[in-house]
Amino acid sequence: MGTDIFAVEKRSEIMSRVKSKNTGLELKVRSGLHRIGYRFRIHRNDLPGTPDIVLPKYHTVIFVHGCFWHQHPGCKKATRPKQNPDFWEEKLSRNMERDRQAERDLKFLGWNVLTVWECEINSKYFSNKMTEVSRQINEGNN
Ligand SMILES: [Zn+2]
Image (cartoon, rainbow, N blue to C red):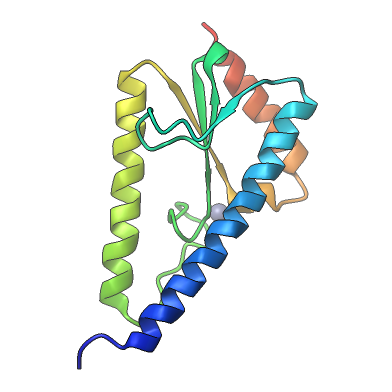
């Protein structure tokens, strides 16, 4: 019994890999926004949840979420690993609760909150998604 040190190392290795993967996702969304003419700031840690992308002019923040880490509802990538189920249950539930709390706080502060998911970014319909995001950004400008 007890914590398997190899498992811990393995997990942090997986997590850092996922983090850099998420940066790739963010870059794709950011260049998509640039292409359609938006200006924005990134990682505003003075806002709840440190949104990945902030468009102050439109009162809009965008989170770029990995489907597994943030448990995209109804997504086939939002699985629960069979190994160490308690660890994952706690970890993933905490992530989801943190996301919900950040969204509540941001909305309370008057921000329009958008989420773009990994599977939407990797989809061949990504440009359609960006069109939808653009429409939603403009809705925040009221
Ligand atoms: Zn997904």
